[in-house]
Length: 542
Ligand code: ACM
Ligand code: ZN
Image 1: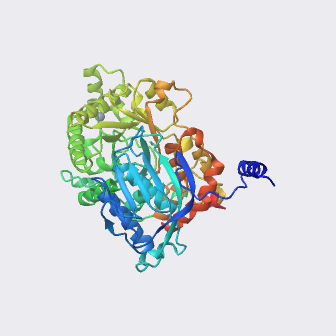
Image 2: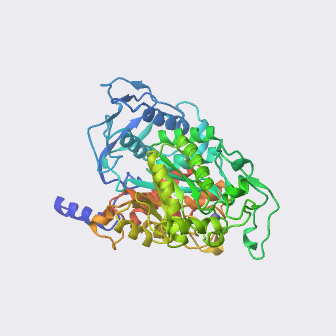
Image 3: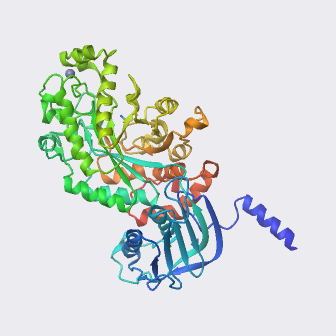
């Protein structure tokens, strides 16, 4: 066969998908990958060179990863060392933070990041290229050199994120997940280049963050006397078992620091004016009726919310937020705003007096006043608010970012008003929904969200103009835990759907391809999920 015919056959074979499997199976798919011949071999004597300031913690991260899963660390060496993995930053720049070049030749691995974040993401891509020990997490206790030489395929990768905000959320109010699991959640997020963890810390069924000034928030508010048995909602049936838990401020500081080393920002959510029954149970003066209240034992939307006519409620909320801001350096503070029935406000003399005195239109106007007053306070401290899309009702606070959850409509309306938007619509991004036939699945809240539906999501709605699309800063998967009581089930609901979303958030739209995603997932990602001891849902790998 002549050369021309042979090359033509190769082209056809590649087009038909019968070409040799790619050796680069990274998720999220990088912007450009040029696969090259040969391998670079990482062994315990391979040197690690930190060639720019501010990368020591990223080098240490990579070494800790090698130690944990392969049983060795690389010696740090001076610039100019031969055969090394070289980390440097500052010479390239992408549209958003996190751009990197990863150049793997048979002789060296060269990493160039926009800054430490880009270098960290290059290391995450390199981690996904390492051969995966089949022993799984048992390797963690492996002796030095037990996995002596790691071959990674030569390639030139240039990469950067599509969106600035790449989020996962976790509700620790309905069920509490301790610090060790939160760290694992963050570890996994960082492998898939997520940069924002939305930590939903307060709920009707539990207040989970220690606030020094108000000790009853955790002494009373973090405990419920029992939990409804999910299948017996009507009539109500409780399990008779007390349930509780909270994070101390020391634990929170430790987790915030841990996240920062993974280049993840934590946005705390303190819910207001609704979903606040646990706080009312602790301090009944915060409610319209004065109580008494009990930390809720059943799921749903509760009529008892903070009183918007009582100035001491604002003093309380501001004092709580002071401590929250001390713990969390994030630009954004999430103030909730969703599912706040106006039942109590309609009959509360204080709330009605406020509406009358300020000439507000109605109770929606009062909610808008509540959120606006808190926004002003947080803005005065240099922070910005994010709220669920209900904060549009009665008028949006001037600088608020909207999290669109009931659909995309709230996000579209906010972008049209030139407000930033994070898309989290239930139909595509609620990871508490079923991902397979409910008959074959553990009990979930409802819905149906298989992995391919997550993958198909496009955050920048076609209903927006090009300018308005720029206000959609990203998207997020939400993990509500009414029916998620264990860490294993939580991982099952998040993985692999979080892999699909990572590609929505990172990979250029025109390069997304579900069949290709599935191939990479099956070839490499399932092995990694096993290595990382993730209790993932198996369907797409079968
Ligand atoms: C929500 O799911 N209530 C924001
Ligand atoms: Zn009131």
